[in-house]
Figure 1 (cartoon, rainbow, N blue to C red):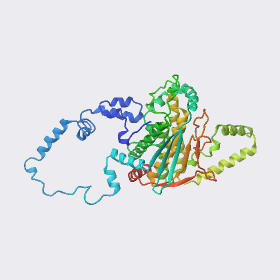
Figure 2 (figure 1 turned 135 degrees about the horizontal axis):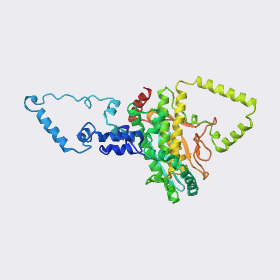
Figure 3 (figure 1 turned 135 degrees about the vertical axis):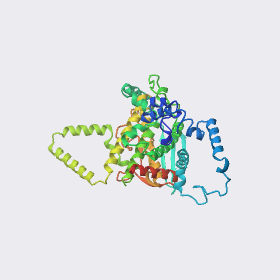
Figure 4 (figure 1 turned 45 degrees about the vertical axis):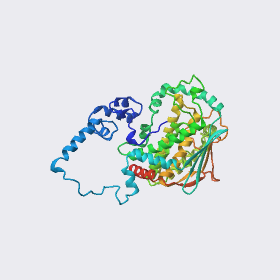
Length: 455
């Protein structure tokens, strides 16, 4: 779980101390953390050191630098070099002529833009909690009064008790995955970048946009964790013994899962619109829900084995493959790449969420809730970025009893029976409504990010 700001501040919190930069390179933030070691290269002088911009700005208090600037100014203004101020010119900005919205937004430093964007994103959201059963309703009201409603109910204690046994079984994977687990404690920037090809230099505003999104997601998740009040696995058994520090807040839903699936949807939508495509639909992600259940998968495997020797089946499969190839060849340019990107990012999110269970700090049901919440919050976020976007208007999670052995399934759609309850149309599609939001700061940063991805 993380709440980190724009890319300018995400180069490794351990490295931001300058002389303590070596801690950044030894940390678990991947390649971003190693940027911290740059601080130790010039601990006293230079643009980013004590005598440079941090001292000048007051970030690192430095009266010696301020005194030096005072003496320097006294010299520059001495004698005939300064004869008094006669005509005061208008400043380049903030004068009587109003600047455009975009000009004003990008004259701000990134952390201030983030504050304004945070206000925009939170202005449309309300929460209401219910104690019996423990549940929380999130409502987002658009400018045309359309409401997006998400109801999340905490699974009963007996579910968590049974899930503790599953957590213990996941511990067998710790030796194999320990490096992944520790590397993913902090924002998983390097992992998403490996799939999406994002770099700090070329995608500055993309990371700023994601940072703003993560800060918003973190606030929503923390509110839900507080209201739903689900203990961590180690509270149920002393045998869990997590391999990373258990966070000092509740478990359900998983913040890592929420952020990872949120990132998958936002990055995918950016790349789709960079190809002049519409943002991908939720139902396009994995295919029909009924094909994803373990029972359906087993039945499909049995049917496949029984008909393997059938020439008719072989011919049918060949015909279907040919039709699929034909469909791909006529698809809009870039759509196949976006589909692959989205699938890979969702698989990465699945892995990140699963590793939190391996670490012993989450239950599988926490990950399922995080997946649903991350994807849905991404749809809201995209509506704020784009101005208008189709969003499922009514969503319920764990509204009834769920199996105690429920676990996330790789490439599983959001409409699994008994877990998620999405309103569907008669055609089997998600019932969505068009939402519109006015978020000028968020939209301006989205536009900059979109230009970067197109480049």
